[in-house]
Image (spheres, rainbow, N blue to C red):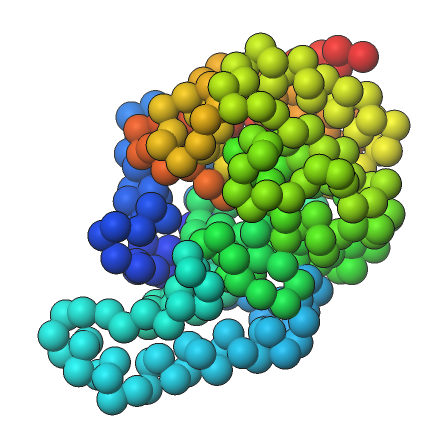
Length: 326
């Protein structure tokens, strides 16, 4: 077992203002908990390389990709931006009401998307390898042709299709346990029978999607506000048999931790033990199906202490093999 953590050099520089919940402090909180838990010393570490623009088109409309680059270029070189920069402030170009670009955002987004591809390359070089991408901005709300919900590029879909294309895999799985439905991921992969998507989320809730599902390759578990870890475990139990039947050659995780009971952005009641449990169950499936290979990518999680503790639980769960319960 070897776990490698990928980080982007610009992840802590992408800053949309002190009132924006998707803040650089999220990464600092994760690093603090990794250090205090001792995991930082036993994991390997790597810097994420920015993704090549061509790979963004594995998940996105080329015109959308071009528009993001154009927005970033205008932002960086505008006279207004130069004035703000000299005053120690940032101009922000808003792609939607929640998702913006400032002068470091494009680099951060390219590294965030690139981290998944870097992780795929590393995981596929051997067996019994798991990777966690501690990068931002997140990705699972980004649709084929638009930014949404803090997400610029759909990092998890790009990584999954990168693996299918570059390693000639036939089947991969994406598991998304973020409290918000990964609408962009589902929109992009719906009907792509090479990809099984298992998704749990609070419903009805932002982004007001996910039920009914869009295609047969999607297993959707809507959860009522107030659902506890016990309910969560019961509702998703069928995933593991379905995954074993599908036999993925690589497992991807959209790892959002905003279903935690302490998170202010939603109303589910998960705790660290629930993240440990699902991570360990997915590790068992990976051991049975794909030589233990997992690529996990950070999505949501906005209470800083709960986020850091939950990431530690997630990594510990991936690193503690159990016998396949089936």
